[in-house]
Image (cartoon, rainbow over all chains, first blue to last red; front, side, top):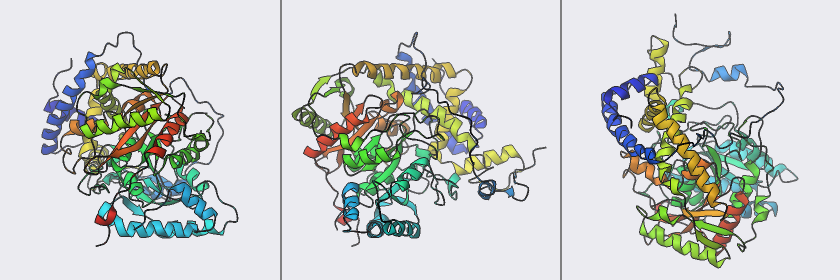
Length: 98
Length: 486
């Protein structure tokens, strides 16, 4: 049985997910997600001993194809959609990393 | 005002030259101008492009395909080249794809004309369209009520006769539930039946594109057009596409339908139950054998769905980082700060809630108790269906436990909102096809839907059942005087 969701859990997880929550969101989400998790506790009642997990309905059908090169998205067209780009150099731009 | 005919009737009229494709598109646009101010089904349109395309079709000497000249509305999480695609999110508010989804290419090759993009819950996360960043759609049967979600705008477009066809996506019921609440046909194909190339991903082990229509033959025809393997989507199966529309015989003799009675004990509206029991009577009168089946693990379907879907969503939505497309928040000094500010400004409350929940259930210490456990129960849910399908050919349930609820009624209560999907989440968890067909109206004239779930790859069977049912119980149309010009 997992412990009740705390404010600290929400802050830790939001940080992992790169979300900056407002005070109001932290309070609301802590309450609402604790309710959702309490509701989801129900699944603990199912007997799953020896049951394999299902990740995908088609897990048994692996798709194979020849590795043939085909045209992909045009670089200039892709860069057009970027918030910031060096189009001449063909690069996306981001804030300084180093 | 006369509602539009079915897609098949419209196509036949164009073929007989009683109407041009341009005329059909213009009719759709006129109706949208009249009604969509009140309904808000559409987010963006490109009228000039749709009319140009219709004129191109009219110049052809042979029909382009089985949807020649038929206007279609597209949920705004399906990529359309040169036409804005926001998935109902601020983070993609100004995003215009450089490519078409495979379903768009196939529809256009078949002669369909894309009219515009429809309102949906943000990233398809919701059951009412109230989580759209650009305002909800309204139910054409009662403007103060939700149309269902997440593909609500597509359901409204078809129910109000703005277009005879629409596409939506169904992850936990997002095609079938709004179809039921708006009184139209909605089909979720088998997982892997339709390519998802160009569908903005929500939960990749569940998402599937499906049609809305005003008749079952139209749904069958649209499925024929969009189905089939696509080399760009490795999860699209190598299965032959059957002539679904030709298999609608109207005869249900020899077919068996199972009813999981034990799921109907609590929380189901009495009018919904009454309509459901009447529907079983209709199916029996058409020759189907009705029996009771047990799906013991379906009682866990909602928690399993919300654990699995949020976990997958938290991974899929990691791509919105402000680097390659979409919103980038201003004023960030570092890369990390840019990610945080962009995602916090761009995502709405429900999306953040689900990312937090999904990240939590995948995080160290909780993975086994929640995510792994949910995946195991998912196996049990599927095994229940496999066992039931040894003795029946389809499982019948109401699509939604209640008719459309009022706008605002559940928006701050996630669990109540999630329970709207109680009968629809099992089919995507098990990867099965399911259809919602209108089964009647409440005394207040709100639509009710009947859901039929079939074996994997056996859309033909549930389409045949729904079609036979519809011939006896024809679809009703809303009175739109209330939404029109006064």
